[in-house]
Amino acid sequence: MTRFLYNLALLALLPYVWLHLFLRSRKQPEYLEHLGERFGRYPSPRPSPQGGEGVIWLHAVSVGETRAAAPIVAALKARYPGHRILLTHMTPTGRRASEELFGDGVLRAYLPYDYPLAVRRFLEHFRPVVGVIMETELWPNLVAACKAQGIPLLLANARLSEKSARRYARFPRLTRAALEGLAAIAAQTEQDAARLRALGAPQVEVLGNVKFDLLPPPEQLALGEALRQRMGPRPVLLAASTREGEEALLFEALAKRPLGEALLVVVPRHPQRFEEVAALAAKAGFAVQRRSEDVPVAAQTQVLLGDSMGEMFAYYAACDVAFVGGSLLDYGSQNLIEPCAVGRPVLIGRSTYNFSLAAEQALECGAARQIGTAEELLGAAEALLRDQAARRRMGEAGRAFAARHRGATARTLALIESRLAGRPDA
Image 1 (tube, rainbow, N blue to C red):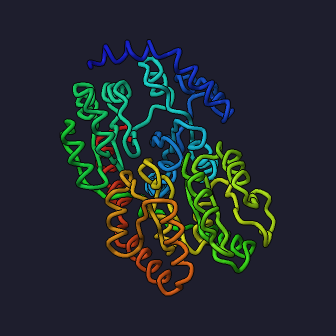
Image 2 (cartoon, rainbow, N blue to C red):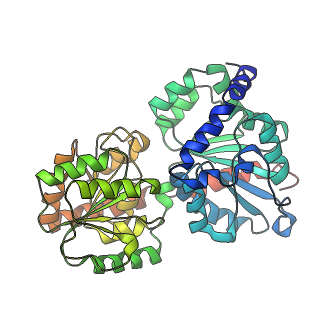
């Protein structure tokens, strides 16, 4: 597919774009907010840089990418205090995570859809001196517009699963042109780099995964201690960042195989599913309580619903054993590095393609154990909850594993600096 045909397809899809936003808004009304930004229109005047030194732009699609961007944002603010930092997102949850993490310390907007006029408006409004796309999103018109305007656009912390690589390979000319238009590509692993090169990326550097540089904030650890006090002395199994379909499997297995006095804490990945998961737990016959009630957990409560945002490190700090969601069903797993960094034993399912190398390394060093079904998950959790020494060994292995792979942020910052160095307005 050429870019001309791609743009024709975008025009044909325009009615669907509006339908998509409307349908999403039925669960998340925020999808109907800031609509103009999605087409490159902004009510406020162009932002003036601090010290007149320009805007550095990072794109983080949703929550995971936004949290991964945190160490890079901190490093950029320290290295370039005269620049403004712009964070763009595609989802309301990503935008909300940005607000919780950075407050008024950054600019934020939705990245417009990849229509040529919308992209040009975006670049003309913010005039970034450099752009950094977190993980892997290839927008052909955006890449072409940045190249035409002399804005170096980098792909940072890039990962590409076999599944995603096959999808991009369906459009070889379009994908190759987008990859060739990037100023630099920093991949997480050699496997990611090999897939990118096979699609036509001319130069790919392997700099590691910046998610290893996400240190547990002290205030989150303190909150974790407070949460644990409210949970009481009983053992705690955390099901973190669960995805649709996984909670039902977990509740069904728990109904058949209770964990004794242990408390199950379930934190769904997406906040729009909080009500759905609470209803699932109640329908399965469990006494349910919500984190948002902000009261001590009652002795009869069997399931605590983690219906809060921005507290994942606290949940990890409060638990005895952590299962990382998105891995029981075929979602590729959520971030298993975070519980390792907190020193908690980790259980993961078979689907780990989003964190394939990290999962493999965590399993090899004894920081994690792999399960195949919800029943196996409860069996492994029960064994660990009875074995304090095993939990301690796995927790220590997890901390060492996370510490051993840090440093990607510094390497990524050096790459950004090298691309900024040649710009007279940087």
